[in-house]
Image (cartoon, rainbow, N blue to C red):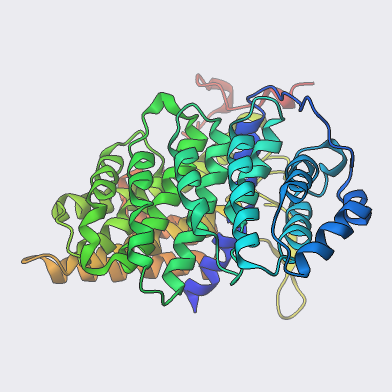
Length: 447
């Protein structure tokens, strides 16, 4: 139950993070607008047109997908993804285009011809310098969401998506949108009962390998971290799909070990690496398990230091500004609450924002669960690591259920006590007139 709540919070942040990464990367590039605008400047105008009604009437009756239908799709339909008239309704436009252009097709051959035309054009739009970067992102998202007549994600779009994601010459934001499409395919394959799903997912593995080995200069750091973090999550699902063929992910595992050992990479990315590696070990991939477990112990300390540092920063900020003495610091340090009898009591001082508790909790729980899985591969010290994992997990749960500075500080005291900052006692002078050491003061108190 705890993990369900915690993962729900993490997943609710996922779409926000995804959009944020796309915006951050997209705005690093100057948009180039389309040269040839379609005749219909809004999706609603296209839907209401006689041409659209004729298209749907023809194809509902079982007619083949011919030149006039293709021209409407390519010249008027797909441009709706990037024209200014629809810029506030990007997601809705994708849904409406699929409905009006594809759901009305009755003949299987006509459906295949229509989707083949769309895949080719959307791939070109993803790489085009003649439309805005947001238009290219929207085209890739539409490509990744195209379905066949049975309602399954279109398999013919997998290879173009993989090529876009793997191509260093493509704008990073577009590559990220393509990776999201590949992730949807992996999840769909995992949930399906198809006999061919191992073959389908194996086609994506080389792309996962390439993203995990991205050099520093190829993608801005925010995009690189996001892509590799998603690949680690997708790869855990791929392990399940491949079964006895999991060795195909040895390249991803090797890159994950390298990331884990690199102290310059983000804490969250290294924690995701540990999680994937723990699943890989149980899937039969040979790993330096002892090294990974040592790194896991260190990551527990680093993650706690990260949050504890925020507390210390805020305390220091109070000291140098004098806000503490004026009762304005610590998230309401001097604000009064009331006990069960209605008597006023001083509110507990908490410096750490709630989001840091959620993140710290997630970090500890993921590391603990990964350590438990990895310990199964050990010939010795297995019980020691299992007990350590239980202890780490208990503190992770406490951070989630009791999000208070005291909970975080108790975790630091348990796992990294040398990090704790002791409060220095100020020397007291017997005779204030003979003081030689100036008192601490804030420049904000000066009159």
